[in-house]
Every structure is written in C-alpha cells, then in structure tokens.
Amino acid sequence: MMIRVSFRTWILLAAIGWAVTAGCANAPKPPPRFQLDPQQAAQEALTLYDKKGDGTLDLKELEASPPLLDLLRNLQAKSPGHPDSLTTADIAGRLEEWRKDPATLLPGMAMVSLDDKPLQGAIVTYKPEPFLGASFHSHQGQTNAAGMVQLTPEFEGYPGIYVGLYRICISKMVNGKETLPARYNTETELGREVAHDTRGSGTNIVFRLKSK
Image: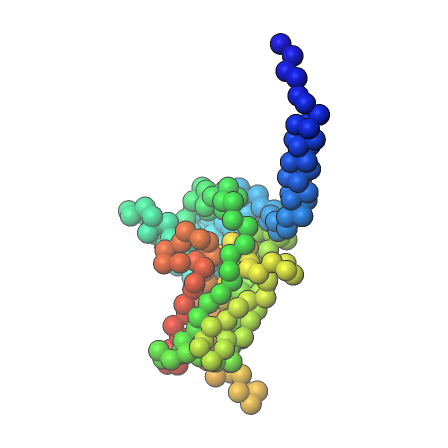
C-alpha cells in the first residue's frame, strides 16, 4: 500500500531531519578511547613483578607495584575472601572492565594533607604502570592552599585523565631540599587504581601524609 505524503509534510520532515543532523554535527566530539590489550598487559605485569615465577603476585612482590596492590585491595573489597595475591586472570579481568566502561576520562583530582593539615605547594605526579602501553601518560599538578590538585589533562580541552594504574610521587622542595619522606617520592609507596568504581572514590583521592 502506498502512503501519500503532502509536499508540505515532506518539507517539514526534511527540515526536522536536517536539524537533527546539524545538531549532531555540532555536538562536541568525545575524547579518544585508550588502547589496551588486557591479556597482554596482565602477562607483562607478571613478567615485571613475579620474581618467584609461580604465576601469582603475592603481597611481598606487590610492594614493587603500589598501583597493583591497590587493585588487589579493590578486588578484595568487592569480593571478600579474595586471596592476598593477584593472577594474570585477576589483572586481565579488571582491565577488561575498564575497556567495557563507557567513561573515557576521570576528573584527575586529589587532595593532599601532611600531619592532618592541607599541604600547599606540593608537586603531585601520576606515573602509569609501563605494562599498560603507549596510550597512558604521566600527569602532574601542584597543590593549592586547600591541598587540592588538578592534574594536567590527557587531552587539551578535555579535563581528566584515563582510568589506570598509577604510581604516585609527591614532592615539596624548599630551598632545593626535599621536605617530604622518600616513601612519598623517590622511593614511593603510593599507588592507585584510578577508576570510578574503586573503594571510596577513584575520582576523589585523598593522600594523608606523615612527616615522620
């Protein structure tokens, strides 16, 4: 059966279609997605940190990777009873969840305190674990009077950084001398899995430092 459409109706439908098309064309483009092979990255993580060669990363081995230790704690928070170790499957499974998540960038903000007081003028650097690949980059920022830091964005015009595993260094130099303990910078024990569903909040990370 043929449906007859008047010329006026045809013009109206064409105008609506043009408006929708134009609106879509003018919409801001989303930032590029990161490129990541979860299985390959997980295998490279084991190559880097599995010193015993038994196919798992125990708590002692995870001391060399604070971000992976944080990932373990996040898995344990979601699944009580998870062992104190990571396997290739654990890491690859979590990275696959990142890939499936529609969120591309997270705010990239943090707060730093020293002895329970906001730390101003500290340089905060997030360094991605090398096994994540070339999509992931370092980000840096300086804390303000409230101890808040906004990291340099992944892309100009798009605030935020990629979800990821980041080793974190916090430094405050005064007269050319480091004022913070080495465990926060040159021998950092700080690391985070930055994701929207981590325990607490992966988008609002707080670092509570101690001078001693």
